[in-house]
Length: 414
Length: 98
Image 1 (cartoon, rainbow over the protein chains, first blue to last red):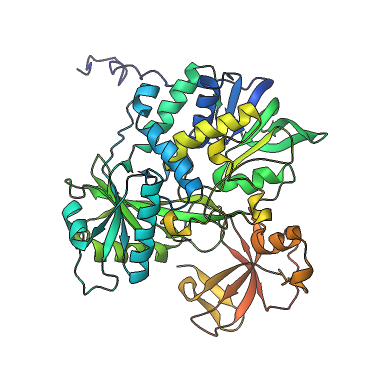
Image 2 (cartoon, each protein chain N blue to C red):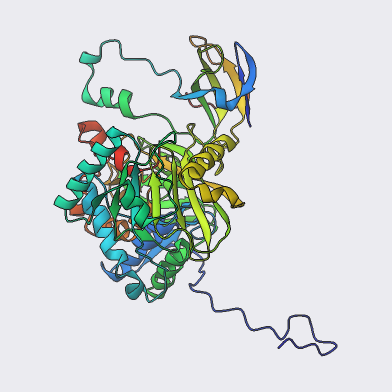
């Protein structure tokens, strides 16, 4: 009950603000490991450094607020149905970790394995999709091919009529795929990492990397110099900028990627539907919004916003696929900055600078990898050697030519 | 919608244009003579600055010609447009990655 006694300050009787989930410390002078970037990957890496690899003197430096970049802006899709063995390895490792993550973190994540359909709209799509299904099955990833009627059965609101511009000919289906609540994932990791002694430091922008004798010894920030035994970069769209402080050139281009949500609706969409050909992917959040992602804006951009015609095309594709959406109202749109590699696979790598590690290039699909890369990047940092599951994703592959081309399975046009 | 000033056609809507990435990247004179490092530089490595960037654009919905532009990747504002083959115009007080 509100206390309405005269003379009492408004709100005085309201309940206390809930406890913060993590400490908000000032930076110390020295850490064993400094992680640059307080998004999902950075926080998860810190958590696994502390919980699995015994390194607790760790700071995560975030220039803005915790998990306010792509971790707050993605469309929360989780799946592991990638084509190549290397990709299956890391994404399936991640999906298996998702399946036990709520228990591990002791925190609800609204992880929902509602399945994902990746639609095929042309004969070539059908061939590529079936090939990917077969590759997935050989790698122990659950996947099957469903025809158009099968799509309709799994997601009744999809328009499978043959007389549309891009008819639905079928889809790959991964039943164990799904969504999770992105903010809860970040908060769950942050809470657990903080409890293990990790310092999560917000409003702390890295402005330089100190390298001496070929070895990284610390970082410059707007809150002073911080010495570090090892420095790990997890700066997503800003990776090129941060790596540039150590003279490292990356094969990345940063692009705007937009998404949007509708107003809250009754449950109409039981699964996740993605279409590479028409540039839209859709699920319905627990609260009821339809969550839709677009393709990237073509130009390089660091503005966390994109062009309106991208949204317009995405909407026209969505309405052709889901005619029922025509009556939904748009609630809001936003953009993030995604760091795209030439082969649409990530870079998780040692560098020529001793003690400096890279995790970047996840492009449009980093959210699903959060647990998997947190674990394997932490192992890579702790052992100063690539974890076997990320050994293929070196920076060096762009010199040797050993690319891992996942443009087909990346599912977002870029 | 953002208007882009094509050096041939004047201001047109962004939707008429295609992006061509970093400008002033020459195809190697003798590709077979390049080292793996030089060839991979040409294939895969482009600058990715936060700020002014010299880029190629194609006006597919108009003159159907390529041109160059300096654009700020933070504000998306076009600072200059110029013809391919021309030198980048001087932009006093601006450090451009090209």
